[in-house]
Each structure stands twice: as C-alpha cells, then as structure tokens.
Amino acid sequence: MTTTARWLPDFMENQRLLLAWPYRGDVWRKQAGPARDALIKLIKQLPDNTPVSLVVPASISDSVPEALKSVQRIEIDYDDIWLRDTAPLWQLNSDGQLAALSFDFDGWGGVQDVIATDKIFAKRLCSRLRRPVVSSQLIAEGGAFTHNGQGDWLIGLACIKQRNPKMTEREIKSLLDKLLPGQRLHFFDGALVADETGGHIDNMALFVDANTLLYAATDSTAHPDYKTCQALKRQLDKLPAYIRTIPLPLPLPQMPACEEREEVELTSSSLKRTVELPLLCSYVNVLQTSRFVAVPQFGLSTDADALLTIREALPQRKVIAVDAREFVLGGGGLHCISHNLPEFKADEL
Image 1 (cartoon, rainbow, N blue to C red):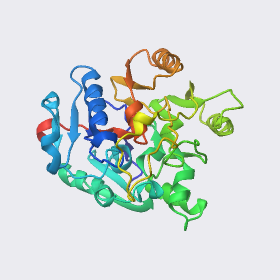
Image 2 (spheres, rainbow, N blue to C red):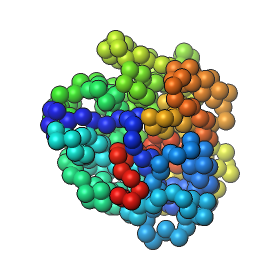
Image 3 (tube, rainbow, N blue to C red):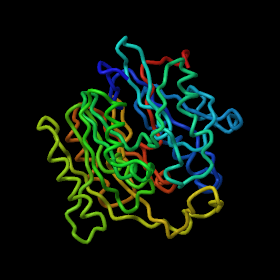
Image 4 (spheres, one colour):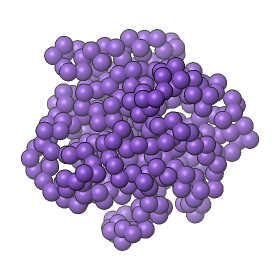
C-alpha cells in the first residue's frame, strides 16, 4: 500500500451497490424466505437508477425470483451475505488504478464455523474484477473500519484484539499503520452488549460524508450500553474539529418473538439463534451511496427520531426508511449486508 493511495468510502460517487442472496438455514429462518423477501423489498425501495449487483452462488442462481430479473448478477460462492466483512477495502493506488486490501477471516471469532468460501471471497471478487489485492494475515472484518475518504479512520479495536489473541495491542496498531500508511487512525476499544461481532465500529459510529459521523448514544444510566456509549463519546470528542458528530438513539437490546425463531436450523456450524439471543438494533448501521442513505427501522418508538435526525443532518441526500428487522435476526444490519464496487459498469462484471 502506498502513501499516495486514496481510500474509497461508501459515499464516494460512481459506485455500484453490492448485495448478496440469503440462503443459510442455520442463520435465516424458514430457509431464508423472509430474509429474501426483505432483500427484494430493500432493492425495490432504492432510488431509481441505483446501480446494483447481486452476488449469488451459481448453485442457487435459479432461486433468484423474477422480481430481481433486472438486477445484474455476479456468480461467486460465499457462506453468508455479510459482504461488508468479507469483501475488501478499496483504494485508488498511486497510478490511479483500483486495488484492494483484505484480511484473514475466522467467522467473527467463531460465530460461524462454515466459512471456507467467505475466507477467500475477497480474493475471488478481485480476481473477477481483475484488480490486485493485498491479503493481510491480520484477522479482521470490514465492519471494524469506517473512514471519511480524507485520511481519518475510526477502528473498532476490541473485536480485532479478540480475533488476534497472540498479538499485543501495540502490534495490532503497528500493523494497521503499515497497511494504511499516511492515514490518521483513531481507535475505540469497546463493544455493545448485543453485538455478536464483539465490537464492530459500524454499529457504534459511521462516517456518512467527509465531515459527518453518526454515532450511537443513550442518556439512560439503566441502559446496558450506557458506559460504552459514554466512553465512545469521549473518544469522538478527540477527533479533529472539522468532523461533526451526530448522535442517534440506541435502543435497548431487543428480544425476538417466538415466531421469529421458527424453523431456524440448530446446527454446530453457527451461533444458536434462539429466543434468548438478543438483537442489536443500531440506527448507525446505515446503507449508503453518494445519492442516498437507507436508515434501518425496527418497529420501535425511536425509529422516527433517528430518521428525522439523519434527514436534517444530510439535507443534500435522499434518506429512506428500510425495515431491517429481518436482517438483525440474522446478526447484522443494512451496512453489514452491503458493500460498494467503485467505477464498474454491469458489462465489466
């Protein structure tokens, strides 16, 4: 990685939205039927002319319905739909060419065991795009990183430390400095209690433009994440003054209804998704491009407040409300299921 590289944020212009087709019965209820319906609804809600590519394994390509016939497909195998974590970070190198950085993958510290194709997804995607990729041996996921495209990064340290127990914190930070040279790396060492990933930053704070960062907040001392949110705010106060921080309400961890856990296969290959497993509902975990921001909605009283706050903070972008309940039942949010492909036309994929 060169010091003149430009790292590409979610909100950069001229990018395609990348999504994947759910299929795992041990993650998604009823053989992923409701999750597929939620994904179709999401795609239909996107603004007109939003370029979308749907990743789907060739073996189940026939399961993609007629409703998505106009969506361009990329046939690559994967173990689950969390492309934010398994696809690479993108950069323009010193020659102005697209390149990538990927990390090793261990299934979020053992949340999933069937991960063989997810481990090589970034390499396969870059091979398909005919773009070079630097593969680091550091175990990490894309959800641990957010940046503003101008050199400022906020990194979830807790989950990276958990994934790499043989490395000291100093060694982790030193390696990231080498992988991201010339960047200003800011770290937060904390996690929300219902976060299966153990500290992904995209559930706690996320850049939505070069100068704006959304973050999770609560004033309730009874909230189980109160201390974490207070520590996060103290860390964000240390960011450069040109970065404005926008607080969003953090709901209490939600418990799924019995019917929401019906027909989830209980296997040894995945975290057991029972009614006792709480759901993390974070409004920070948005899906975005340069044109719009899709704000997750959970059927909670705080939904409207979060939507209004983001609309007021980003008046130049279309802000849409998207039901994200089905995705959080599987362990993630809108940002988690999405990724971006810079400057590719459909016939190049």
